[in-house]
Image 1 (tube, rainbow, N blue to C red):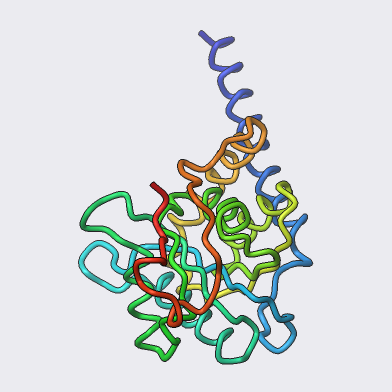
Image 2: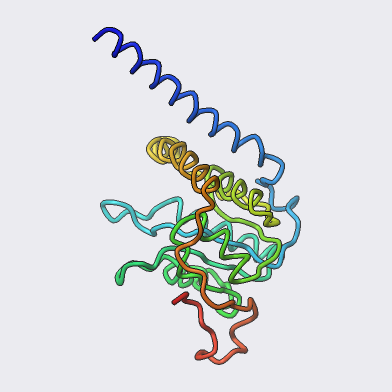
Length: 225
C-alpha cells in the first residue's frame, strides 16, 4: 500500500510538472507576437475575434465577451484592421456566438459589411485553421484575452499561419481563477491535438473576405455544411 501511494504521488507530481511546463512553454514561445498597446500593433486586413458566450450563470454579462468586443472595435476604429472575422460556436439552435457578437459590433458602429461570420469555430483550433483554409485570411490579428491569445498563436505558429494578437482587457482577478485552471488543461489538450494532427469539425467551401454590403445576401455563404 505504501509503495502504491508513493508511485501515485510521484505520478501526480510528474503530471503537475508536465502541465506547468506546457503552460510556460506556450507563454514563452509567443510573447513577441502579443500586443497590449494599440498604437504599436501593425495593420492587418483581418482581425479574428474569438467567440465566447455573452452571459454567464445568473444572467450577468460575461466580461470576457464585453472586453473582446471593445478590443475589436478599438482596432477597427484605429485603422489596424479592415474586417472582423467573428468565429464562434453555433452548434445549438438557441446558442449563436457569432451572430450575437455581430449584433453588438454593429451596435458599436462597425459597418455590417465589414463583419464576416464563421459559425463553425467550435474550438480555438477550428477558428485558427478555418481562418486560413476556408476564409484565406492570410496574416491575422487574433483578438481575445492574453491567455487565450497565447494558445491561439501557438496553434497558428505550428500550422505556419501568420498571426499576431491584440490582448483584450482581463476581468478582475477573482473572476479568472476557474478560467486559468481550465486554460492550463486546455493547453495540454491543444498539444495533443497538434501531435495527432486534429482537424476542424468542418471545412466547407471557401469564403472570400470582402465587404458584404456589396454582395447579394444569397451569395454570402458563411456556414460550413
